[in-house]
Image (cartoon, rainbow, N blue to C red):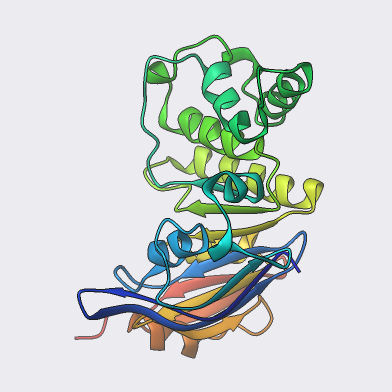
Amino acid sequence: MILDINQLAFGYNGHRIISNIDLKVEPGELLAILGPNGVGKTTLLKCINKIHRPSEGSILVEDRDVLKMSPDEIALGIGYVAQRSETSRLIVFDAVLMGRKPHIKWSVAERDLKVVDAALQQLDLAQLSLRYIDELSGGELQKVAIARALVQEPQLLLLDEPTSSLDLRNQINILSVIRKIVDSHRIGAVMTMHDLNSALRYADRYCFLKGGIIHAVCNCTTISADIIEEVYGLPVSIHHIDDNPVIVPEEFPN
């Protein structure tokens, strides 16, 4: 088991954001967190990474209690890709190398450089390694953020809306890369998304949040139009193309 969450809750100023969250992620599994705006998707990711400290519950990553881990220990086990990556006057290679910080003791070792080279190759960034990241496109910058998380060599990868603000080509490219990383490295991944059809295509399971709690956890064979309508308040139909489910919204109700 890569990730095991039990009865997780978080809130502030007396306002509960998420509660009663139970989730598990296996090696080689990509879990999509879905739901309308404001239901706690990003909050859940930040609790897993201890950016937010939960008020209740437990989070285990490979049987280690995240809430008892130091920031350096968390960085060794969990890679986090935020919705937006800040740009700076760093070249791509150095920006990715920063992800090796938890592993570097005294100075950068040959293995650190090899891990960065491998990540740049895997994400098709090698030709951009000497470019400044503030000169990159949105899709290229997102790849750099993923590469930086990947060189941490985490057991768990957290991605907060990794395709937001990207064009269709870059969305497909980024999701394909994430899928290959999860499969090839046999890590676990949790990804928040708004695009239901992309989630159905690339993720193994889907966790729908509604009102800060889990409404349903399903896969491509158990997802239903009723679940989606209950969560989003919008009637849909589910069709299949080459055995892949495709969600089609119905006319918006008056």
